[in-house]
Image (cartoon, rainbow, N blue to C red):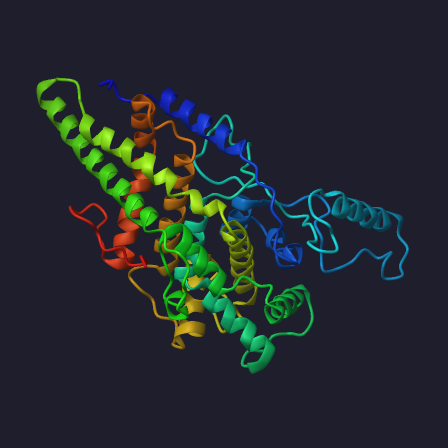
Length: 406
């Protein structure tokens, strides 16, 4: 192994190599019903964190479907609107693979800009989901997004505690979600929990109550956290080597044994990714992400209706407030640890690490060492955020007791 530190050029080249490989991966799959409707408002506002989540997964085609139809359809003849509607219809029925009367294709497409950034290739979007995206969804589930959405839909449909207007696009989205839920076509706790168990070996607090008999992928849980533990040990050795170099002038040489151990762990960890491509796990993940992003956008638009002060304008402010009011049934309670921020840190860092591992040449020790240097902040960030969430230290010796493991 080379004693030379990876240069900025080495790191940028590897980032671009990883992105190019990920961008080549394509897996056609049907979107959940009415995706275009429940996501139709997300990109209407100025860029914020919610629209960034949308951009990490989807792209909005020109002529994105709206709850307001062109005027030609409503009796007012305007040539431009008629042409727009015709173009939309052509896009809708020309999308291949699925028969529109059975599995209607979606104008929304997987075309996201998530993962390790590469200045030269950042325009290359990712056109499919990976197991890291299921991890991202899990942490947003743990944050309570689906619990908040459940309370909102229940209130709109039956309870009537909050003054939700019966008109407008937001109510149209709520109505769509309620109808899909009644028909069993929404993203459900059982579907998501099945995928967490089969792919990650994890379960949510709600999922544990279902008595699921899904096969548990214990390998992913143990190997992913073993990888994190080994990587943290590598960084510790590297810092020690650099401290010694500062005193002696000798080249810094992080532990070769630790590097080899990391490569071996990645090798078997990648084999544990396989269940994500079996059964409905991929589709459950896609549906969950669509509903999760739509739910966060609804909370943003309805926050004052739900009793959240208008002064709370950012997701890290209004999402924890919505959880306190709607799920916990208590006044907004400021906390030293922001519920949204720590879950987002876990979600984004874990996902981005796993995305890279999909295509990393871990048998190339130079490439592996360069990559470890690139993702050090993400691995340390995951460690810190997970400790804040659960009190578990991922870098501690031995086998950590992971809170969400089945």
